Length: 115
Image 1 (cartoon, rainbow, N blue to C red):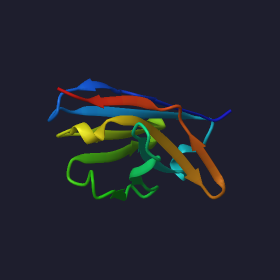
Image 2: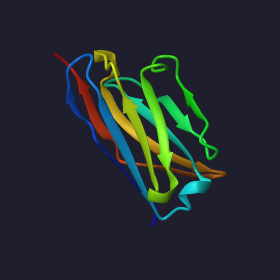
Image 3: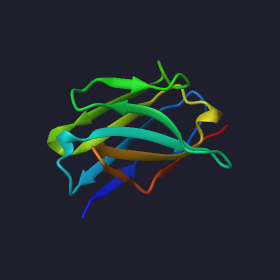
Image 4: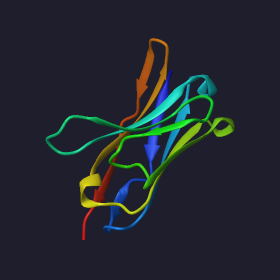
């Protein structure tokens, strides 16, 4: 059974930082491309960042320079370090694992940026 479990969300002031984790089980983690997405209230889910199997990252323009995606294959975990958070970063953050036609999602973790 495949599980992706996000953690690390919470309430933070503008300018603050959070580190999200995505712990995977039931997959050969090192073979999967890991992505992070977020969904703000009333909006569609949007792509934030991806860490490929070769450790190459990619970022959406809105978070580039502020967020860092990484992975630890030995721990079957992907991370999203979020710095200089802004109110518009508020939303539910989801991790995604993708390999070929295999596509899995976590349940999401809430991030709220507010003063």
